[in-house]
Length: 237
Image (tube, rainbow, N blue to C red):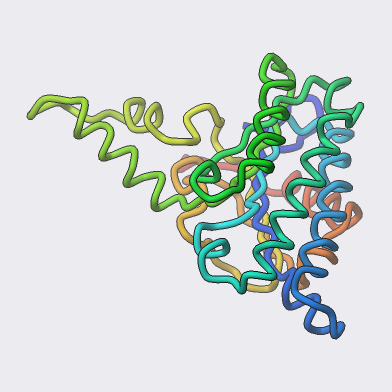
């Protein structure tokens, strides 16, 4: 559903692909690309808030990102998470705009205790906010989420129970999220990955940015939102 006051999408989801390629093209270490991506994301979050976007979801990492990447890169990525999530604790605009911060995925199984402590603080400090929502997908896979939801339903229900859309949605990790209106992927590869928000993005408008995520700055974000506003949504009519 569009933001009726601005013609903007209410829920924007971003797949921030290309940090490592961005670094490699500049002769930098992979984690320097992740650092550049994190700095850029700060600006995009601010832009989304200023534009009046109600819900912003960002894919931080898949399970494979954490299990298969080199140890030094994984360690650097977790350090970036800790530093930037600590900044969220004192970010005035998060609190002025009453932004609820959600962490979605299997991060509790993968992250060290010190990082989990910071994340718990962010969640607790913003849990009562209701005006806006900022979601980070961490150690997340939409395919895993869907399978887990189906398993929960199977464990809870007797044979012959009719499974409804509402029942499935309520058992997803993303149960609290509204449908995605606009999904943006950077990095020049026009596809989804690991079923990212597969249920919520069923009717989403898609936007593919040719360059890597650190190059998808606030100006490019605004261009993407302008493109969305020009599109016509028919929903099968």
